[in-house]
Amino acid sequence: MINRSELHSAWNALVVAWKVVWQASSDIERWAAFMPHCDRLMGLARAHGLTELETTLEPLLQLLANLESPTEQEKSAVDRFLATVFVVVRRIMSPDYQQQIVPRPEDEYALPTIVMLTKLPESMHEMLLQMEHYGYQFRSFTDYGQGVQYALAHRAIAVVADLPAGVLAEHKPLVDDLSNGGIKWFCLSAKGDFALRLKAVRCGAQGFFISPLTVNVLVDAVDPLAYATKDEPYRVLILDDSQTVLTSIQRTLEQFPSINLRTLRTPQHILDALLDYSPDVLLLDFHMDGCNGLEVARIIRQNKAFESIPIVFLTSETSEEVQLEAMRNGGDDYLTKPISQAQLVNTVVSKAERYRGLRKLMVEDSLTGLYNHVKTKTLLQQSLLLAERQGVPVSYAILDIDYFKKVNDNYGHTVGDKVLKTLARYLKQHVRKADVVGRYGGEEFVVVFFSTSAESARDKLNKIRDGFSKIYHAYDEGIFSVTFSSGVAEYPSYSNMMELVVAADEALYISKREGRNRITIAVNTKRG
Image (tube, rainbow, N blue to C red; front, side):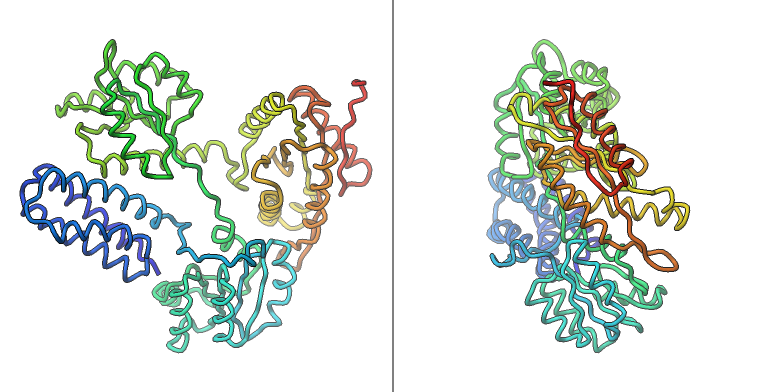
């Protein structure tokens, strides 16, 4: 199991030591104090089987091993290496990181596999029936060794081990095999006291379940492993009137696929660039011909749409007063020229990551993780504008869970929330990435099908409706199932967003009046 706390501590200590070297790179004693930190990080990489980190560190350690009289050339080389190492460390520190296993071609379209190790397979019968509806293959084994070998051979997404007394000495070789094979495992026990949890954590458990295990609990735990989304590259906008500085920054940042760049040499078009590019970070020169960075920052912050974009000033000023002035005028950080490559990458990724996280909170529904009402409308409008340019249809569907009030009244709001989350997950899993799924409010959801006719959208929704109706939802005394109804309207049959939304809503009510659990397409009788 990766000890992220130890890795984080080792990296931070290395960065601090490197800053000391950077300030006086001709001092060999400072280099001598820096080198053990690199060795420590390599030791952690090897101990935890972090091959990517180990490979990234090798050229750095090789350079340091041959270092005799350090020059600016060695300093620059190490700085480049550290920038690359930082990106790898950051990725490993992510909660969603998992050591990659290369899939076999024949497994490319197979459902991800979950393996259950239990002495009571009959207790998992319902789980076996339900997991396929949630997008998983589920296998149960009473022979734990056989189950582990199956998990390794079929590269299971996760293994759940039913260990009533916790992890015993006899289980240690099995969990070691899973950890060495890069497979996450979860402990299942009738008790959840601290001692059992601690023992499981020390043996590399990804999580801890208290029996009886429910489908919803298991799915919530394994979804991030099986269906992790790949983030788009961070967008970085650079405004600097020096071509030399722009070129230097470009050379550093363009090495990383996770960073996308756009440059600007004059401030006159900064607002247009911000609107068009929507950067996650703005690198802003402090001194420019005609105006300074403080004035540009004030102009940016006067626009509400840009008030939260991180601004990092690039300055040759070392005065603390100037740096404080920069922070008071809308800056989030500053980098002093000449800029350390490691510091540049560290600052850019950290600021962009935090900004993405805050922005995500603003556009997502807190319960389901889908786009909220406001963001969904924005994306619908963008889809319509794009469809107009490309001459393709867009179908807009609104879904409503049938008799949802009875679910809340009969089973409680906690169970009702689980039903909402299950439908949200099911929708996301069964539409294309190009489609938009949002929560409209209450028990209503919307799907925007780009370049899709109403008839095709109805066919897709009918498959989703049928599959969702077969999912069982648990409550204290048993299980139940629910259905949903939907209305679909198509652009350009309805020529603008308001017409489209109203038409889909009216079609939804037709579905309800005609008995629910069905899909209705809106027909525009006003158009010839």
